[in-house]
Length: 160
Image 1 (cartoon, rainbow, N blue to C red):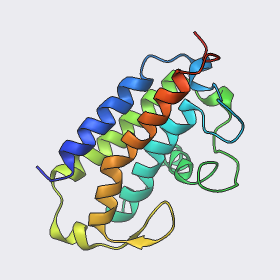
Image 2 (cartoon, helix red, strand yellow):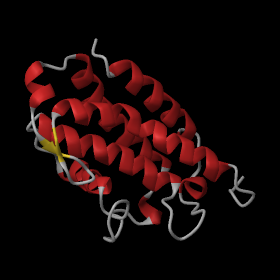
Image 3 (cartoon, rainbow, N blue to C red):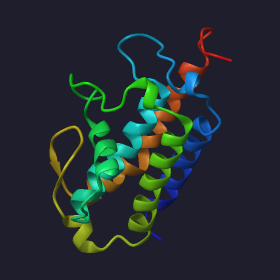
């Protein structure tokens, strides 16, 4: 077991618990114009997993996975349009994306080789980092957004 797996399982588990029972209206509620919805955050979290691990593992993604990978940046970290319209952001899509991202991430974090720790890759934020830096970011990233979800859910306007 790697030093990153425990943190990832804790933060990703809490993130998954925060979104798994939400309706489409709740997933697409926007607190204000400059924030991601919870559904967009979920696709962004899975997108970062695809973005990072496709580089580190030299993995080719299928068309649907690649579209989610684009959520790592587009509409979240840049001015491009978010890759999915709100009508597409359903509980089923979120469940699929989070499941696929986790299925790629957990086995990798269980068996991190020295070569993977040293391998350079591009961070979703842009700088070139090594695999150790990527695994540290992947482990904590869902926790960052789980805190944002808690804030969004506390809004008096959040759909019941």
